Every structure is written in structure tokens, then in C-alpha cells.
Image 1: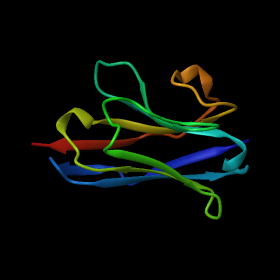
Image 2: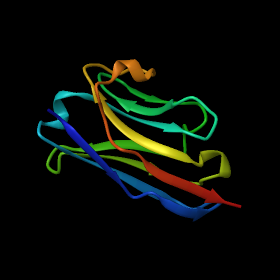
Image 3: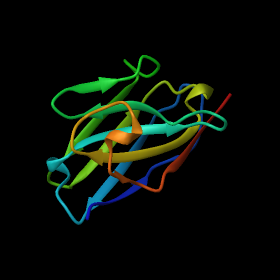
Length: 119
């Protein structure tokens, strides 16, 4: 069983940067497609970035966010730059058999970490 634990969320100002981490245990993260989703209050959970056989970024974060993995640390990251209030959400890391933009593609989820961008 793969366990995922996020860290790195917090309260930042507009234009700031933040890096989220997702530490995996139980299995090797490199065996999975991985992604970051976010969910703002009253909105559906959306995929913002993913890595599998290809790399995906949503149009709202492309050019500002970067997803990466460290096989040595069995950890995935989401580097977020030039943050705006619209990026405020709970961010979740996830892993599954193949990359996709819907939550149903993924089997394993972290508990979520809050990111709040203040203007």
C-alpha cells in the first residue's frame, strides 16, 4: 500500500513562491503516475499538474507551477511561483496507474495541505 503525506502549505502574499512536498512510503513512487490536484471552497477538485508518460499542466498554472519527483527521496514536489489569490485551495498529491486529469484516474491520495494567498 502506498501512503502519501503532503507538507509545505501555508499563508503567503501575492507574487510569492511556495514548494509543496509529498513524501511517499510503502511503495516506490516511480512505479506510478503522479499528480497534484487542488480544491477551492465550493469548487470541484481539479488537476493542476501531473507526470506519467507525459507531463500535464492546467492552463491556469502553466508557466508558474512545476511538478517534479525525486526517486532517491521517494518524494514528489510542486513548485509554485507568482502565486495569486485564485491559487488559494487545499492541495492534494496523488498517484495512480496512468496520468489523467480526473480524480478517478488515481488510487492513492494524501491528506491535503492548505495554501492561502493573501492580497
